[in-house]
Length: 616
Image (cartoon, rainbow, N blue to C red; front, side, top):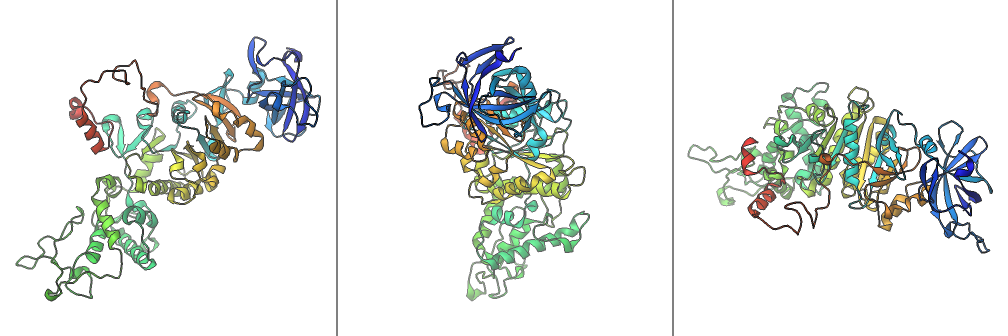
C-alpha cells in the first residue's frame, strides 16, 4: 500500500490541540477504498494519521467544510469547503501502541492520511488483551470490536447518559449480559439499583433479583432492608419524619441507643461488647417495642399528672384490675385506655419529648404494608427482645457475594417519599461493609464491586443534598481506593450534581438533543473532545461516543444489544403492530379491568393467571 492511496491533504494551521487540514483537490467526501476496504472520508469522529518521521500522530475529525478553515482576515482560498478540523489525541512510534498526549506537534505542510483497518486495530488494541470486554463495534468499521477497560471502568467510575429512547437500558443489559457470560470473567460483582423494575425480567437467568413483590416462579427473592441496619438519621427520615428540636432529637437518640444496648445480650455478635455500641451501630433492636413505649409516653392518658412513666398509663381494666386490652406490640395495636378526666385522676400525656406527630407517623408506617420490606424484613425482623434469626452477613452475601455475581435490587415498589433515603442507606451499608473489610477476601480491594445507579438524576440532583447524594459523593471521591465503583445512568445529566458527574472517568454519551444536557457533558470532558461530542443529537439508537479512562481513545460505537430474551422492559409499546393483541389496529377482546385493578392494588405487573395461581 502506498502513502498516496491513503493521502487526504495537508495541515495548513495548528492551534493548541487542533489543526486545520486542507484536503487534496482529488479527495472526495464519501467512500474511499484502500486495499478492498471502504473508508468514509470526512466522518465526524473518524481518525486520521499524521506521519512525523518514525512516529505517527493520530487525531479525530471534529468538523468538516468551509467553517473548518482557519480564521483569517483575508478571504479563504478557492478550496472553499474542502477543509477538516482535526483534534489531536495521541501518538505512537512505528510498531508500538498508541499513547495519549503529544511529545511533538505537526506543522504546516505535514501530510494527513486515512487511518486503515490495520491502524484502527493498532489504535483500539488487539482482541486478546486481558482486562477488556467487548461492548459492540466501532461505527464505520464493523470488523473492529469496541472494547472498554474493566479496571478503569469500575475503579474510576462511569456514566451512561442519553435521552429517552437512546438505548441506555439496553446498553446496561448488554454489558451485564457480557459480564455474566464472558469466559474470561469467573465471578463478576455488580449491584444494580433498579428504580423502575426494568432489569428483573431481562436478567433473572443470570442475576439474583430482589423485589418487594417477589415470585418464586420468576426466580425472585424478597427485597429486605432491615431498619436496624440504617443510621440514626436515615431511621428518623423513614420512620418518624423530620424532628425539629435538638432536645427531642437527643432524647430519641438516647432511646434508640438504649434499645440497641438492651438487645445486645440477645445477639450472637462477635468482636464488640456493649460499650462499643452507639446509635449508628447496626445492632438489631425492636422498633415495635420502641413504638409501643413512645406511644404510651406521648399519646396515652396517665394516672399521674407529672409522672409520665409507662407504669402510669390509664388502662381500661377488668374487675381484677388487669388491662382489658394492653395493645399488641408486634401488631402495632394501641392499648385501650380511659378518657381524659382530671376529676377521675386521668391526665393528658405531657412528656418532655414533643414528638407526638412523629410517633403518629411511625404508627402509620409500621401498619402500612408498603413498608414491610423495611419494618417487617422476614428473618431479619427482631422480636420484642431484639433477637433475630439471621444477621446482616447473610443479607450482604446474597447481595454482593453470591455465585452469579450480579444482583438487581428492584426499588420500584418502594414509596417515593423515602426513596432518596433508602438509596443512600443501601449505598452506605455496602460501602461501609466493603471499606472496613477491605483487607479480607470479601472486601472491595480483593474483589471490587460495581454499583449501577439507574435514573441517577432522581436522587443525585444538582443540589447535592440528601442521603443518596452524600453516599454517591463518598463513593466517587473515595471508592477507587477501596474497590467500589459506580456507574450512573441518566437522561438528564444537567440535573446531576456536578461534583458527582465530574468524577466519572468514562462517559458513554448517547443521543441527546437538549443543548443544556450536552453542555453539562462538554463541561466534564477535555476541551479537545467537544467537537467529537457535537454529533450527539444525531446518533442512532444504540450508538454511543465513549470517552475517558475506560478507553484508550474516543470510540463511536454501536453497542451490541443482549439476546432478545434478555432485554429490559424499556422498549416503546407499539401504537400500530402486526402482532396479535398489540396496538391500536387490533380488535379489543375480553377486556378484564378487574385484573387491572388487582394489579394496581397489589402493585405487581406479573400476577399469574387463574390457571397458574396454584403453582406459586
